[in-house]
Amino acid sequence: MPGRLLLAIETATRVCSVALARGALVLRVHANSDARLHSERLLPMLDALLGEAGAKLADVEAFALSIGPGSFTGLRIGLATVKAFAHADVPFERLRDPEAIAFWPSGIGRDGARTPMPWSRDANMAGFTNAADAWLPLDPRHRALAVDTQGEGSMLAFTREMIALRRASPALREGAFIVLDAPEPVLAFERVQGSERVLCQFNLGPDPVVRPVAGGTAQLAIGIGHAELRTGAATLGGYSALLVAL
Image 1 (cartoon, rainbow, N blue to C red):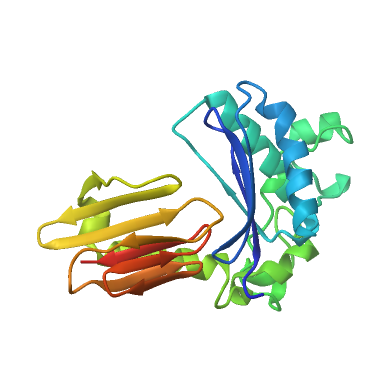
Image 2: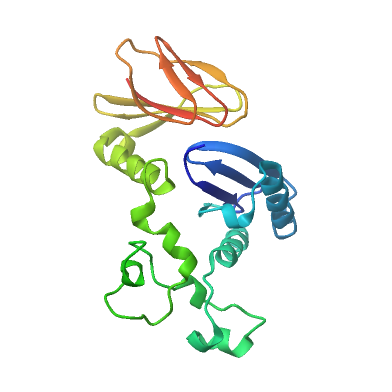
């Protein structure tokens, strides 16, 4: 199956949720609505999610994290979890963070989140610098995730595609937001700016749904997951979306 594994975490709102996706296809979703128990529920939910998908944390190549609006304490729970997952391995003799040095080995500090960005897999220091070394070491595991390895189907390519779409569309950047009636679990709205209208439909459930698309000149702007535009209707597979220019 094409695409890299993405682990998404939402801890800012009352509902704590996690999702695993490969490229734009959502594989599994878990949610829990026990208020003020996110710190207790999050890691067991992640274990169950990965187990059902037959995946390990080491297989995950990117993390996505909600940044609110919502609870600041909830945000910190998600951030701390992802930070721990994404930390690079920095040996004690290379630590720079006074906190990490003082509490080693029981505390990880912040240095693991500050190691060099890998731009080119095979370049010196993965393209971060022409020098032989940097202030903090390059984690060898990060070479495989360098920018120049992120081809079609990667989360980076998908993100760039979405950013380019937004930049090219005044409606998506600045347009009015009009919520449309839609049965659960569908989220539907239009963005309107001048003569430009963009219909956005998201299927937030696992089962396929068919949704009407008004306008005889509708053209597919972008599909996410298993989504198709047909005459007068859109077929949305589980956890998919369509953005349609009307």
